Image (cartoon, rainbow over the protein chains, first blue to last red):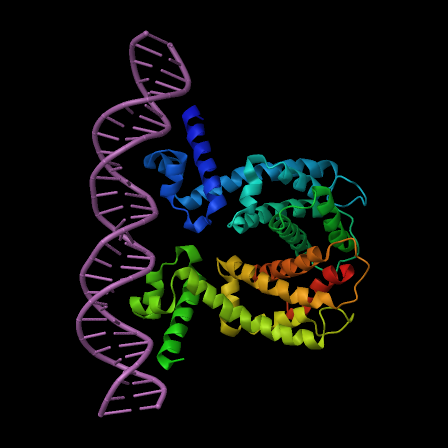
Length: 187
Length: 187
DNA sequence: GCGATAGCAAACACTTTGTTCTCTTTAATT
DNA sequence: AATTAAAGAGAACAAAGTGTTTGCTATCGC
């Protein structure tokens, strides 16, 4: 990709992220993004069809990265399968968030955080599902697997939301312990 | 309240609900609501300041009712405290949803369902918290109560979302059983 | 029936959107 | 360094949506 293109793309993403820290997604106008990013109107529309399209692109950039890295992690340690392994995928994910790559914390803290968390949950659901396939679990066979998968990814995302709303007072390791306490008894 | 006022209010709510079944919240315009409800522009703005204001009013009408009824329920049976009581608050809530009063199912099924579920979760959180206060629980004292409250209301809402996305194939009683299976072990 | 209140319709100023045009700048390649 | 193709800037545009005002009519509660 052309150096200029990368530059504008970054400028737009970064302006958008800044604006999201102040205002809700629905209240941000394309014009404001353009002004903050210091690009021409035409340029914006050459990169993204609409504001929604920009949001989607940002989400893909954010979570593609994080989930990809978590996927690698599951190859060595599978979910919570082996009891007391300190390295769980969830802990890894939380540490990754903590690092705040691409200002992901700002986006998950903003007024419109739910948009991002919903996107996050969808990606996470796939990850959890892929791990559920080859796993020796407790005899919860009367509870549908699909329900459990949703429960795990759903409550993980709700935990992240809780953590962030509470100003992230816990370390990823603490959070991981909490999460284990509510998830391990049922899988 | 004036009979005419009630009539327009209902017309607007109902038009808004119909539109939400087709299109996402953000793509619905005030003009469309006005046309669908067959009211004058001035009339709409006499009732609601903005589209967001209308949404808020609708949510309050919906969940005020449901949560209020669940509150009564918790007076007799407290959450899941007494082991195998068939009447849990959660089951009650699910049955209430199933009745589809005020077309709540349509709203929770629509493209913008998350807006409503988020509102639902906030109300639910209060309900769960109020029940947690006077309750003899397991010795999970090293896990913060606040975390557990969030986990319970969060995963309930995620379950409802899962249920609705899966076209509500389970009965409220089945769902309640699933939910018990993942919640009772930890409280 | 009467006064008060709610609703309607049209027009309004204003904002936002997405497109089109022309012109300038920059990158990659030779 | 010169060339060419692509990218960006800026202005202007129609179209659509918002929220308000004004003048008039219909309806409610008493």
